[in-house]
Image 1 (cartoon, helix red, strand yellow):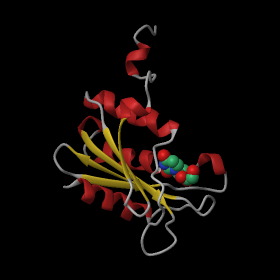
Image 2 (cartoon, rainbow, N blue to C red):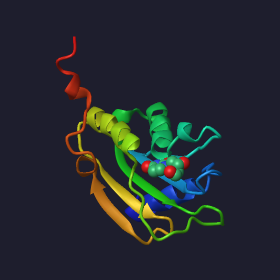
Image 3 (spheres, rainbow, N blue to C red):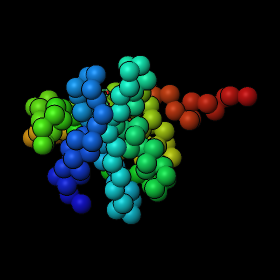
Length: 147
Ligand code: THU
């Protein structure tokens, strides 16, 4: 699967978002080390702060499908999903909470992740490593001294 294919999957997933409150649709596509693809989209609810992000939706599916330790490649796209295709020129980067969840998967996988951060129209793509997105993150190793 090419990077363009992975971004296309994230954009398609965003069209399945339930985002009536923000109007901002996000899709995430995760490919396993064996080439299995899972996707997720944000899902909001009337209690605004309890909505679920696309990345965490996709990570949950990845955990069930092939395990977080087998996460290999990730793409995220965000924008306006009101039409037949996702639109918007500005690329999306994972929110703080999603960076934390991705850090857990990265620890299990034993490697840093490159995340393709795409605009709604898919034209702008930033390639950002997770270690860049969450430097000095608090991860499983941070609990080494716990009792
Ligand atoms: N959102 C995501 O799904 N992922 C991110 O990393 C950024 C934000 C969603 C949450 C909310 O439903 C909408 O985008 C606006 O914040």
